[in-house]
Length: 169
Image 1: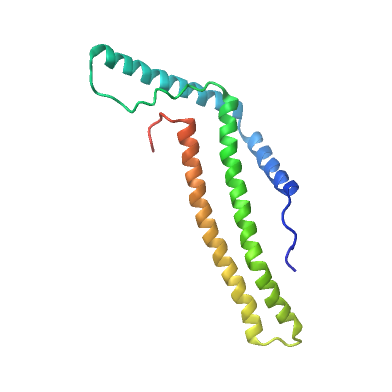
Image 2: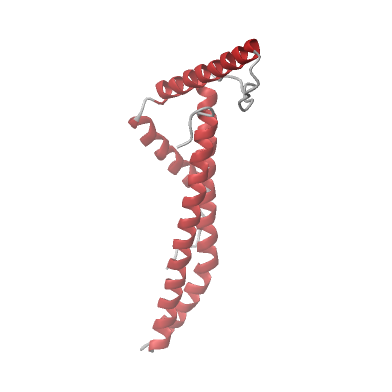
């Protein structure tokens, strides 16, 4: 029988804690954050210097004026931003998964009950169960493609937020 209880906040937090523990053991995130913060600060200062040189020489060539972006040398602020984007992705995926299960579970449960109510189920009862499973798997595949695209957008946002002045790949 399908799991009928919704996933509670404790289970979600355990999953997030597990993911965080794996992440902590693989990289020195503080050192990485410091490197990113220093890179951002250097790039912004370079842009400010070039803009000052253009103003001094009277050159009219103007770049995008992103010099109002404050250099962030606080690794914790960058980590908070990164974690909020990643946590948002996890929450969105969890909610979409829960929506799919809530949508399909009652239908599959009804088909399974009809299948088990008969001592010798006919092809149509068996096919009804299999058909609903195929629909569920198709919807899971569609959800996975959609979530992958959204996750790719989240990674782009992270790249743009952390390294706003870096060349685009």
